[in-house]
Image 1 (cartoon, helix red, strand yellow):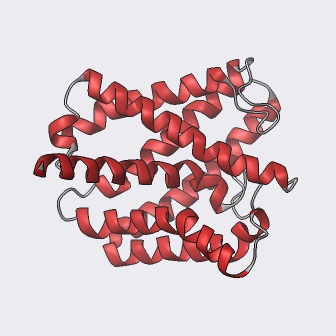
Image 2 (tube, one colour; image 1 turned 180 degrees about the vertical axis):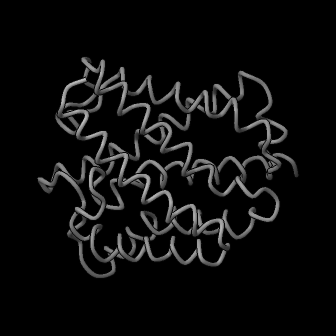
Length: 230
């Protein structure tokens, strides 16, 4: 492992530990505090990061912003307030599973990534990294999902094949979230959406895959509830 990669991993690890301590500490403290933190993240993104990527003004800006990033973060707040009392860990699932995939993709991609997926948008993304992210998510899901008490996960996600399919979907959707933000940054010639988090960039850089996966999880819940009533 070369020195550049070691330094990058060190910076990401230190800032990640500090961010994780504050973030998960707020979650353990109370649902209200964690919801407030998520809403504060939304405001920071909307007023300081998102305008760098979307130059549309006025009504069009806020119309676009409702679907992204507002709707995904409001979904995360909903999961926190509605499902926390049923399963204390479930509202954290979109964060942990997405960051597990990001970490797996980063490490495997840096070590072995040679076949680039879309170098014109994100030169660092490789097929090897994507596969590494998938296996990270799959292993995490094998450990985590059997203990979830939330419908539909407790019914439909028991067994290797359903977990494999969900892991694949989370990997692809999280990757699309990452590429979406990377595409917008490339258009504006930006490396990061901000320099708020050393080694990570801005909040959008850290939460891009989480936001896309939150909508996927919400859609799974909605589809399952509808199918139950049919």
